[in-house]
Amino acid sequence: MSGFQRNSSGQAVIGAAVLQHIVETGTLTTPAYIYDLDGIEEGAKALVDALGHDNIVAYAVKANTAGSVVKRVARAGAGADVVSAGELQVALACGVPPARIVMSGVGKDTAEFDQAISAGIRGIQVESVEEIARLAARASALSHDANVSIRINPSVEIDSHSHIATGHDEAKFGVHLDDLDRAWAAIDAAPHLKAVGVSAHVGSMLTSPEPYVASAKVVCDSAKARRAMGKMLEFVDLGGGFGIDYGGQPAQPPTVFAKAALQLLAEQELADHQLVVEPGRSIVGPYGVLLTRVLQSKTSSPRRWAMIDAGMNDLLRPALYQAHHRVESLSAPPSGTPWRVVGPVCESSDDFGLHAISETLPDYVVIRDAGAYGFTLASEYNGRALAAEAFISKGQIESISASPGVDAWIKSRLDA
Ligand code: LLP
Image: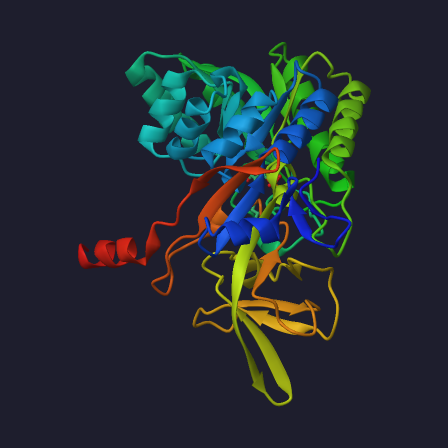
């Protein structure tokens, strides 16, 4: 499991490929996301092994939707957590078996219901009593049975950015515990719906398992209550949220979360249920970087900036969540007086923060830990083309997904 490393000469390496060599081949335009496919597969496999093959590591596809990535995750034995028809079709086409796919999402449209029902996935996770009525109507219209799981709102607060906390009382997500009996009754009454699971997702970037376990206990209570009624479920889904170390606060590895989840299930005497977890960030985040060219410096006494050709449209996390991603030189570890690294977009929030890159600015820098919620959150804001993506395996570029380029953007706007 490598991700980003430095070799003995201090050069930046991703998945055994020296980034400077990639730049020298001239095969990539910048900005470009570069992913270590072997690292992703190895990390996913370690988690699948830790959880046990009868259980499901449902990779949250929203973190990184690239086919090359999803195929590797599937090859490691993981399933998928999808939130749209688009993600469902990508997961299926990449070889994820329907029996290992769950569909989450607080607002699904009719086509999404229909595709999930027809594919016969492991669980369609409903988030309201109203949604159950809509799903029941579609299952009847298609004369097709659907496996249903209820996502509950566990009412647990987490210590994370407010935009990525989802399990508290005011969040739009999940069924409130007071409404749960009504929701089960609605599923039980629908001829084509089968209640198979209960889930929660408390939020993202958890650095230790405690809040995860707190939310998981509420899920377990719901499963036990159901079993006591003689209507045992098939699985409990404890959600994702395993954090990664962006260079600030260390995070426990995903396998620690998996072990805590398994232990809880045993303690709660729910080992007769299949366990599902939904990690996204921890599967891909550390295994991707964003390669970007330094356009110029700008000094305006007493300040100085390093201007790069990647902006908030390429990597939104710093602007949206005040997230910190390390920005480093390709040739040597961080040194010198920090530069304020900014992108070209016309927003003050297009700012990647202060980074000791090197005293003199290099031609290229790399933004680390960009494998999750990087490309998938990108936009074409300011008339900028989406970034290229390159996929590394065995130290070589296995494939490149080229940037559509600015000409394609111009055409699409003129066609509008
Ligand atoms: N399951 C559900 C229902 C989710 O909503 C999410 C993420 C996950 C699983 C995966 O969570 P993870 O293991 O990746 O933390 N764009 C934000 C993160 C948003 C997460 C949204 N839901 C970021 O860049 O930090």
